[in-house]
Structures are given as C-alpha cells and as structure tokens.
Length: 584
Image 1: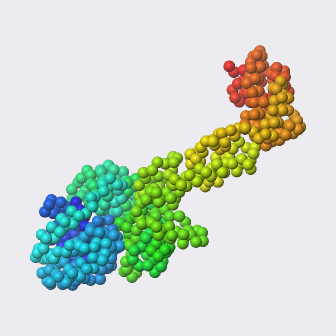
Image 2: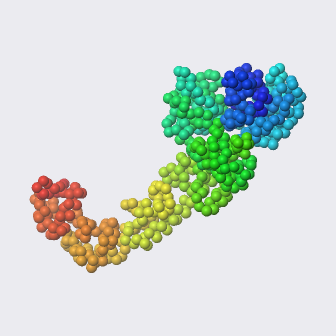
Image 3: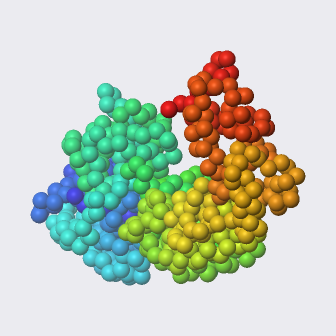
C-alpha cells in the first residue's frame, strides 16, 4: 500500500476525483454531502493496475478547515494536488502547497480536474510552475474529468509511477502513529485511525499513549476494511485498543513504541519561511496530526525556540509547520534540531545557543550530540531519535571522548589538591569528587579512577595512600615502642598530646589501620584484638570482667570498651550474669 493525501482549493473536485478512482464515498458526514464540500478527513482506497493499493486521505479545501487538512497531510509521504481547469490556481491551492512545502513533502503529482469544462493547459502550466519552486520540485500532471471518466486511466498509471518512486518503507523503526480519528465501535470499544509511516503493528502489542502513563494494548487491527494480525508501514490503519476509553485520546495524540520517544514541550528548530525576527509571539505548531499553540523565541536569523502548550513525542529531524491562524498564514516549515535543549538563563546564552544551532542540520548525529552534551544516557539519546552505536563509558552513560579524557586528568588534579588541603585524610570522598567534577552519577567517578589512584572505603587516593603523614607515623612508632610489651595498656590523654596525637591525627591513624580506637582517647595497637582473644581463651570459661582485666594486665578504662568491642564482633558472648565466654 502507499498513502497519498489530496490537496487543493475548496470545490475543485478532490472528493469527486477520489470517488471516481475508488468507487468509495470519502465524505463521511451528512453535512459534508449536503454542502458538497469536505469538512473533515475522508478515507478511500483502490487497487492499481499492477495490483498495488493506493489509499487516499481526502482533506478539506476550505480555509476554515486548514487545521483538519494539516492533520491529514502531516503523516503522509505523498500528495495529489488537485486544480480545477475552469478556475485555475486559487488561494487555497497556494496555502495547501505552502503547507506541503513547509512539511517537506517531496513526492506528488497534479490532477487538473474538470477537463471537460475548460482547456486544462493553462491551469496545468501554472500549477506545475508553482509546485516546481517547492520541496515537491518537478511533478507529473494529468488532465481528468470526474464526470466523464476521461484521463482516469492515465491518472492511475501516474499514481503507479509515483508509488514506484517512493523510498522503501522503514518497518523496523519504533512506531509513532499519529491519531487522526477516534471513535467507539459497539462490541469492540475504542478505535483510532492514522497513517502508519514507519514501523510495524501487531495484534497484542503493548503501546504507550503519548501524555499518559498507562500502557495500552492492541486488541485488533484493520486496514483497507479487513481485519489483519499485522500491519506494516506505510499503511492506513485502524487500531482497536483494549481497555481504553475514547475520551482518553483523540486527534493529535499518538500511539508509541514504549520507551522510544522523548515527550517534550521545549524544542529548538530551524525555520524556513518568514524571518525568525518577524514571527509573532504565539503561533500554532502542526506536526503529525497534532495542532499545538506555541510561544516563539527567536534565537538566530532562522532558528527559534518553541515552548509548546502540551508535550509532544518529537524526534531530532522531525518536520513540522508553523501557522498563524489569525492571518490564515503559513509562517514556515520547521525542522527539529533539539528536543532537550539547555536553559537560556545566563546573559548571552541565547546568542551562544544560536551559534550552536547554526551548525546543526536536523540530522541525528551521535558524535555531535556527545560533543554538545558531554555526558548523556544512551536511553535518552534513543528517545531523541539519535541512533546509539558507541559503547558506554560506565553503566548506560555515553561520553564525548575529549571530555572524558579531560575528566580523567581532572580526577588526578582534584585528588592531589584534596590531599594537600587534608593531609590527614586517606583520600578524597567519592561524592566530594563527583560534585567537584559536576558528574551526575557516582558510577562515572568509579569509571574514571585508574591506577595509580584507587577507591577504598568510599575514598579516592593513591594506591599507597594508606601511608600516614610522617608526623603521625612517627607518633604511632613511639606508641609501639612504649607499649609494645604492654599491648593492653592505653596511653593517657595527656600522653597522647605529648606524642602529637590529637583527635584528627588519631582519626587518620585509625582509618589507616595503625591504631585501634576503643573509645574517645582510648587507643591500642591494631593487633590488640587478636591478642586479647588468645589471652581470654586461656581463662576458665566463663570469665568475669575482673578476671579479664587481670589476665590482660590492663585497667577498667581499657577492659570495659575492649570486651564490648569483642562482644560486637562476636569473639565473645556476654551471659545473663555479666560473665563472658570466648566464642570458638
């Protein structure tokens, strides 16, 4: 199947032509038939001589229904531009063409209708000249009469050639089905329709509804009036959703492959059309089948920032259209450059941002995104529409190689600086280093630490960082000399001061494993615990505090916290009568 949208001035015979080609009635509403004009979107299809199928999205031509027209054209890859031979090129012909051009539609053909009423030559020449200056370029043109049927075989052949020239559909990309209709079918529930531009839908698939947190499931699929287990792009499709009320979704919503789209209300875009500086402060953004009011902030000559009235699932490279509904004027097409732009809070930020955007072309570029963002999660880039083909540096984090190298150098500098400022501490706390480097995740710090640095006990230091500063090491050596033969005697507080062991020095020695702290100002040499267990195991079991104190040749000041520490470590167990036993 290939899908084509009609375009053209009101009452130039779009619906009549679709009816003549398909034998189907595209005007769905009684009001449309009574007034003889299309008000909303209509759909019909037919089989071409080669056996292929063409589906038509028939759009309204009246200027009051341009938003409806844009909802039908937005997701469609090709257009059939209809011009009446007896009236020629008209205002809505021009606005529809401007819309197609703004959306970047590059495939189409012209049908000059009512060829039985007037010479089609002038209308055909004018139409082709107007179209040649747009994204459609040179197109084929066919003169037809919906009344007599003249030219219909030639038009069908032209449609075949148009279909043959379209790019091959992409069926392995994530689904983003813009909803153009929603209704309820008795016995089936909610049904939505849209043009499936890329991807593949299957019965049973779980999808996300843009703007809602709850998943939805595909209960059934219809295409060309038949139930199908699977529908692939490009196709018109009706999706029956399980357990979803109709009032939860409507035109402009989208069904999405879970986890593959970034919903955003702030985008930076490149504008083609009116100069950015001339844009009004508010416009309407048309993308897919959605029409959303936006606030406009010009950045550069052709770049603007748009603040959307509601978030949309947009990707880098998306084409959209800006329109001033008050003036019935297409201000221009936009190409999405960034769906997660940085804030512009500082003075001069807008000018700097314009310089960045001037270098972007709207094509997803992993290297460029990494260079600009420096650090970003792979999942975030995927949701922006940027293919990820690089290995993460840590967890699911990707990094710009140059920035990652600079961070590695900065780690060494920060750790060295911290060591100079805190000579008694065994390295820099990991979280302090993370904050100094402005890193969003601790796992990035761990990945950046390389020999001769290491992480130990939540701190980053040199591999030999356990070595104490010389004044502290000298004081510990004196303790070992003075108390080596009395391992369970602790220096008194004034002796600690004489040795140069204040609270910070003791803390550094304890962290380095050079001293064992039992309580404030009660420290022993680090092997005292194992020695104490051996001594206590030689006592008759159970033993009392007094017996332990005598066996250890120490004071109650040391014996009480020492035994409590052994209890906590499970080396001894305290009994109900306050006696203890050594746990073997």
